[in-house]
Image (cartoon, rainbow, N blue to C red; front, side):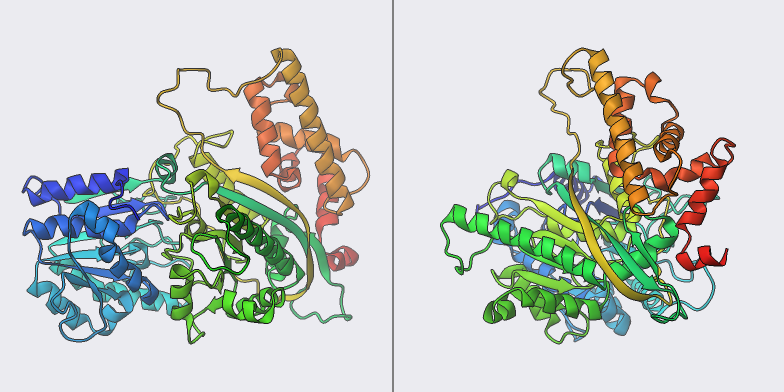
Length: 622
């Protein structure tokens, strides 16, 4: 390992800031907010801050609070890393503490959890009051403002009540600390509530909470995914989108007594069927198919790296690549584990495939082994490993989860985007994520593409940092009363999520992509490709009973595309034709057929579409 490592831009920015605080040049700063994209290297920030401020005599110790017990070891490792000790010239150590007296035990500080602080708030408050403390609040989005207004009716869930207890216990620590360092990779909450300790702009009707980055006493360090990719701090994501179809029974139905619902497509279905189809797919044959794709992709990666290093088939080594499987629930996780183990010889299956769920007795040992040792090569989990897991060897993720909230998905993707120091050259590494090709995941991907500059139509107000809250939140309820019957995979397509990064040394040129031949011929070719894609979607939807048969469906789909783009293709410019093609590659025209409503030329078609897409039993009743 190298004796030193280069700092990333956000790490250099923090070093400059705490240097100014240490010299007495930034006396008004009491809070530092580090909004760092998941996988961007925020775990080094507390080390940088503590090393500079303790050496200058500005603080006495660091208290680092994390949301999960499994993250305490990673915090200890950040301070103990010999390469960073050499780079930063520090000799500080912290310990993972329980709720016992003197948690630091003569070291430079300690690491604890939100649960521990809530269980013994007086102990930790006394420590913060007795010493000038740098309080590091990791994944601060776990702390909602207490008693903040909640959406919906009824009592708070157990998870919400626990988060409220954490916030009430942490608030006195906030007040007692000399300096607070807030860390987050997803600086928003799925429930829309404000985050404890952060300043916000006044509430505006129709908009979610927005952090006031210009509040007095607050310094902000931002590091977006675009910046991280430009500095090669994270890997670009390759998506393997697997489409499929599923069938299920609705509440109150039993097999044989009533018609079943489906089969419905995951990728081409209507919104009302997306949730139950996904719920079914994750628990039936489709899940096995997706697991198989991820499993064999991991085997190919490991085999290639073994061959490049001259390693034998069973020779253990770091940096070969690993598979992380994220399941929808613990029962499914156990089934996935058994499925994967069934594809391997007995001894290898026990050694290479582990599970980490809250009910597994050796979950923390499995997580530690997955992170630090050559084996196991496959870990199955539900939520324990999706956030904060520092396992750079993960090269493939099987995203078999029903959750579609953006912060959750970003954290999950980040498990594969870390650069593996043992994995070879940056360009030889990859982050491959297999996922169901449903409309909600497709929407999430499109938003990331827009932000990174790789989508054809950027937003009017693109987000440039990781701190702007997401204006639209998706609901993640599990469908009620669904009895899964069967599902299967239909087709797999790959796509890379990579921003177009400008080269500062390159001469100025037309930002439009290079095209061969005269513009008129290029336009004609693009129009022909548009026609072919529209016709292909029409044929696929008619064959899958996703649209009414009869009539000219391609003609109606052409009208839908015209409504979406705002132009007919004969009047489109070259960039507009390319944008329309890119849109068609990510979207189904059937999902936008409602745009023809109110147009008398297509009124009959819209009524027929509604009838044909209704469940079979409902059509029979009509």
